[in-house]
Image: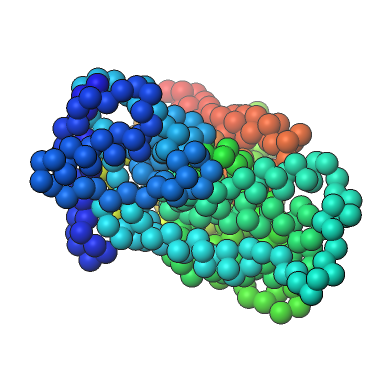
Length: 250
Length: 222
């Protein structure tokens, strides 16, 4: 199929940027969206133009590196997929496709379609971990009994790959689904109990510092999340936060 | 508590929910009292006189209600401004209707429309009541309420504005009811589907009831 692409081009953080129109030809339905972009870049290079910069790594839907707001939706029109798992059979010959970077004050564009997602790293560093003594006497994790339901829920939220689709699709650029996933994954497990209160307080504080918006419960994030993480975990984070705010000694 | 709830995004969300719960509870009792006007003028006058002269209602609940309304409005606008600032560059192509409904995305619009209506509502009913009692010192007028209501509901333009406003209120509540539970941390596999259904019922029945009451008095006086 032949496509018309409206691609966001931006030299650097300071550049204002804008949409450029490119024609790309010879795309097959079984190409992934990123393979289509590879073909586009090959054609641009042949024409003597600069290729478009975009993020990608594993290309098998598990690393969360690829992003892209495609035709008005995070990761494009398919559900529960990352951009690398989005196939061109979802599009029609002759179609015009808009390709834009995530839009959020907390995730500024670095170049073209690449955004700086280090705000997620800083949130994670503020409490999204379990401190473990590495003296060599660490207990076998399997020795701790964990109810099946809790293990399942922790696993569901641990599936978050931190891609940022929740922020990109939220009309308020809120990161609450991401933070809720990271808070909940430890709150369900015995290993996460020691730092439970401080974790949620610190992570929410860091989220606010980064300049993300406020959740208004539109539910768009859970629809666009490639891992299908439910907003029931945002409610859980709210409970965790309230409880920690009231009972924390600091 | 290390910091006030209003200093964090999650805390502000919870406070919006709490003020929302309070306003929804108030709306329901307001509806029930208004419904008395359809049943009996005397009953409506009796209940309104009690509400208008009872010390607890006048000097405790009324100020709390006023603060609740102003807080919900002020915080709503503040959050909307912050949320818009969180995305300084908009998408050239955006399809929000693919993943969320109109009501959830436009709470600020429906909310401001309801608040504009409240301006008219205060002008119609609340300010004259305040003037009667606190400026003119007329506290004991047990039969004025029904007459005043009838007088206001003679005006077709006012009826039309009231009806349109209640459509906005309904749209606001269709998202607001269940959203308040979610914000307060209440999301449960077993109960949330029922809460959503109750929310839809509340958001349709209460505004439709207010519209019915306004139309009832208008057509009765034709």
